[in-house]
Picture 1 (tube, rainbow, N blue to C red):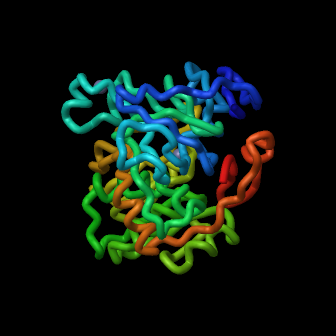
Picture 2: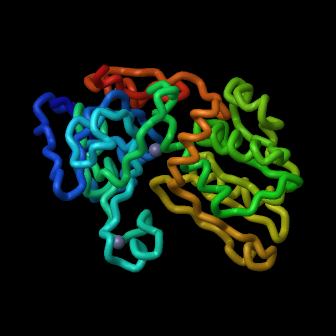
Amino acid sequence: MKAVYFDGKKALFKADYPKPAALLEKGESLIRILVSAVCNTDKEILKGYKPDFKGVMGHEFVGIVEESDDKTLLGKRVVGELNDGCGHCLYCQTGRERHCPDRRCIGIANADGCFAQYMVWKNRLLHVIDDTIATEKAIFTEPLAAALEIPTQVHIKPDMPIAVIGDGRLSLMVTQVLALSGACITVIGKHKQKLSLFESYANTTTQAEGSYEIVVDATGSASGFDTAKALVRKGGTIVLKSTYAGQLSVNMSDMVVNEITITGSRCGPFPPALNLLKRGLISLPEITLYPLEAFEEAFEANVFKAGFLISQ
Ligand SMILES: [Zn+2]
Ligand SMILES: [Zn+2]
C-alpha cells in the first residue's frame, strides 16, 4: 500500500509498504483511510520532536472499518483517539490512559499512523461519525477534542476575560470552544488576515497588551510562553497548548510570587467534539487535500489545513 514513512530523520513516500493485518480477537479493526490531515505535531516530528519514532506518520484521520470483531463498527465511518495505553499501570487504571508511560500513539510512538491507505487500531479508541457530518468536517475531530480539553481542566467563568495567543488552526478551535461559555475573549495574533477568521467569536489584536484571568498559549512555539506570562493576572492561569522541539528558559520565581497556575493541556474528549460538529456549533475553513505522493507539498502548504485524500 501507499504510505508516508518517517525513518527517524525524514519523511519518505513508499508505494509498497506492507498492508497491516488486524488482530480481530485482540480488539483491533482494519480501517481503510478516506482522508487524513497534517497536524503541527507532524511537522515537529520532522524537526526532531520524537527522535525515537520510526513508522507511518499521521494521527488525524477519517476512515471506514473494513474488518472488526465489533459488529457495530463494521462498514462505519470512524475517527480514532491517538493513545493506546498498556491497560495495567496506575495511569491506565485511573482513567489517565493518555498518560500511560508505555502507551502507543499512532504516527507518534510505536504505532503506524494514518498517512497510508490502511491502518489498524483498537476498537475501543474508535468513534462512529454521525451520517450528517461530512468527512471534510469530521477530520477536525481530534484537534477540536484537544481544544475541549481546556474546559475539562480549568473552570471557565463567563465573566472572566480570556486571552488566546496565536492565530492558527488550534487557536481558532480553542477560541470557538471557549466563546461558547459567553466569556469575553481576546485573540492576539501576528497576521491581520488570519485574525479576520476570529472576528465572530472574539476581539482580535496584533498587540500583546492588557491583563487576563486565563491566557491560552496556542502559538505552537516557545515564544508563546513569554507573551502569556506578560498577560496573565496575578493568581491567574496559563494554559499551555504548544508542543515544540526545543527548550525554554523561564524565571519560575515570578510564577511563585504571582501565584500563577500553569496547566499543560494536550488531547481531549472525542464525543463532545463530534457533538459540536453535528450541531453545527463550530465553523472552520475547508481542508485542502493532496495525494499521498505530494506529501512534501502538503507539509509545506500555506493553507488553513492540509491533508490527504486517500480513498473515496
Ligand atoms: Zn493533531
Ligand atoms: Zn498503562
